[in-house]
Image (spheres, rainbow, N blue to C red):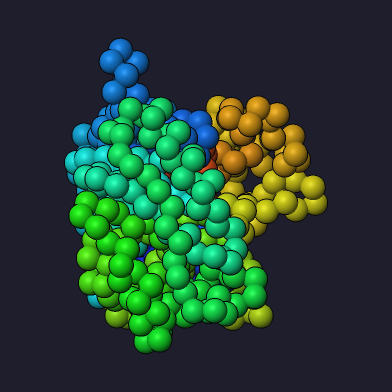
Length: 441
């Protein structure tokens, strides 16, 4: 049984299925995975503001390599440090990235990049991102090698200001010392009334992947391509058919075309990722249940069944908790206190202080760029990713945890959330498969 349907839960379920286990994944929804903007950071790129300039070597000022950033993310409390030996972290992260790409490819989505080189991307606000892994759409928008950057103005699109993004992009490129290239805004000429009132990004993305949408895009970009130019669209080039839309636009424009990394409400990348993962689950034979979990039944220091809301009980030889933190419901406020709702597992912050039972607002600090105990709170695990009791022993022998539920790091601040979800989800699936094989309930 896997509880949680985001990246961590899907990775765990796919590994379980690959190891021959009969697997059921229960989820209320995709969780924070649906809000991914197109980057899946394996190693932290900035210890401060999300999207800020990446960390540099203190002596020479050079931007740290992905490998160096991965090592930097391995703090004493970080899941990378607690759940895997340092000698196998890099290989494990590479294997996880390759596995994700293989899961997504049949759905026409790719996960591009890794730890070998930094790929520079820009987001819809104009911030420059040092990307480790990026999805089809934003991946084609890598700034490297472009002789000219042209941001595409889509009049009427909600939350999109091409000129403001261009100014920010110019500033950040200068701060990072990137090669100076011409930057410009190009208006996309669409038929009158093409964008509906309100300009919802998801609606436009869906319309652009229709035959008439592709035709309109091709006409609009047919004279925009020049040698060395990179056309950067806001993330609206399709919901499920981004690869097909991109190919058609590139053919008409005659130059490179990509998307900017999204931020709410521009997050079709999260929708694409969730749809591709669900397709992979279906191909692998994983049973997907849309439901909420009420409790986990236990006896003899093991999980025995998962009880759904409504009373249905499903027997389990192993259970993976991957319900996230606040978006997915892995952590809740109950009676004014922070709790893990299913097994009342103990929770810890970055410093190792126990915080379950504490009022959440007491775990918020005024320092915007500093550590926030609330957002780094989660369960503590052993080397097999089994949640620990207060005495340091596994709470249940066949219970495993993955993703944001793991404590000791702040995924929004250090930007390793997607990497931890992918890496720990696979590890939890492998460990749960071994536990299930060891003996039936």
